[in-house]
Amino acid sequence: MSRMAEFSIEYRTNDSPMPSSRVEYICLENCNVSLDYLSDRLLLFANVKELHLTNIQFTVLPESIKECKFLWRLVLDNCKELREIQEIPPCLTMLSALNCKSLTSSSKSKLLNQKLHEAGNTWFLLPEAKIPEWFDHQGSIGFSISFRFRNKFPAIILCYVSPFTWKSRDTGPVPFRVIINGKTFFFTHGLNDIRRTDRRLYVDTHHLHLFHMEMENFKDNIDKALLENKWSHAEVHFGFSLMYSGIHVLKDKSSMEDFQFTNPDI
Image (cartoon, rainbow, N blue to C red; front, side):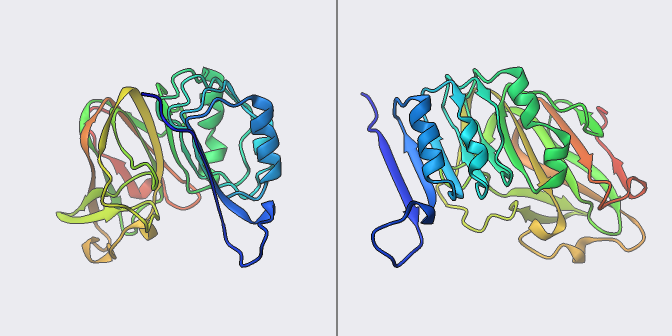
């Protein structure tokens, strides 16, 4: 049975009629649309902040996406014919490309650019991608990522590859369990609207998950678990097996002298 096509928009204004400049959210699902159609719509709604293009069979993300200067979340799940992402919106921090198995290596390489991820609080999900070479440490099979640090919790980027993913349709990633010196905390990546319908999804290929982890994104104050002037141990649990994992320390915020990677596979 075919799915019903959906096009919906949301905007914040008391004015009528609706001006396209006020549109902040667009969701386009289960449609066959042309490249010209998408390109024109992106130019029309250039102030959009969240764009969901789900289960749409197009091959190239229009270059006009770069004109969406306020776009921070882009969802391309199940766009299985999508091959090229030529331009990246300047404010993009969250990208989900679940099951976009046709993405070229060059597109994935562009989306995993070191400067892009060091500059912002990103969360990216990409199919059949490898841990970027610029990561400081890489590991293999396991259920968690562990490390040691002194004093302040470090500013890091975590990355893992797995055939499983925690992701909801609307909110993106769900909280991870982080154990610091035996005390349990939950990391939310700054999301305050996590829904109870979130569940573990099995996808038809492995995916790479890349995201920032910093102290301010924990649901609770973790200072009570830290050891002053001593090494603290942290372990991030994902709830499913990992094929590969990696950590990159943001050197402008944290010192490598106060960080140790403890995975025995490294």
